[in-house]
Image (cartoon, rainbow, N blue to C red; front, side, top):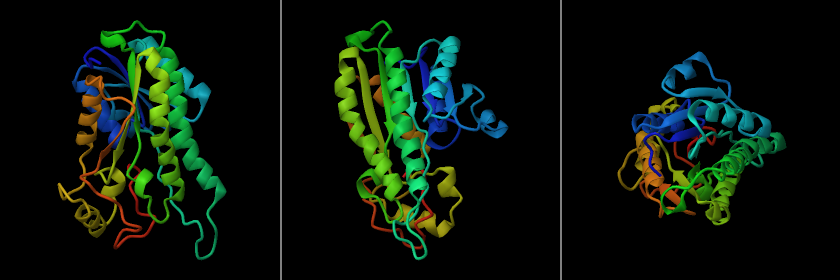
Length: 265
């Protein structure tokens, strides 16, 4: 998929990994629309070169409206990147309480249901477009997480939601192949997002020390660069690509509680 001149939609694009994707695609000449919940003036200023639309990704009506508004401005999207997500944590059996069922539902609703909601509605619009080289009509990139494979203590809800996104990748790619639409997942490890940068230095150092190579936290621009390569390489399809420096997360992080986690982990 050629990026230049192509309409793109990025959910959760006002911060973190999503913001890096927005800037990367815009610099490559894409016409980008950002779908994000509760867009403050500060968030809007970070995506000044993109169309900013407030949207709850778990709402079918809200996503339908946002995709329609984006198409009216930029044309139908051929590139969709799902970065919207939350990273709420909690132990199944805490010292004074058991895991909140509402918290579990909320995390799954945003991370898994929201991803599927955007995927299904975006794919329906892509399927109506003229095909390009190799019959391609579009590509959808979903954000998974290393937690989908090595969820830590306190990440039952988060790991479940991201595991669902990982499992969604292949059946969605197989089904949408007949329409010329690719589906790919990226599973990042610890990255330098606002949540990680807000944690104590010793926590950041601990996370970085667990990465075999390079022994540091990931840069959001590296995530965005992989999104760009996926867009341009049509043979990448139905796969979840780990982007984590070969880290395999332990049951818990040293020098940190289960509440100190990146939403992109």
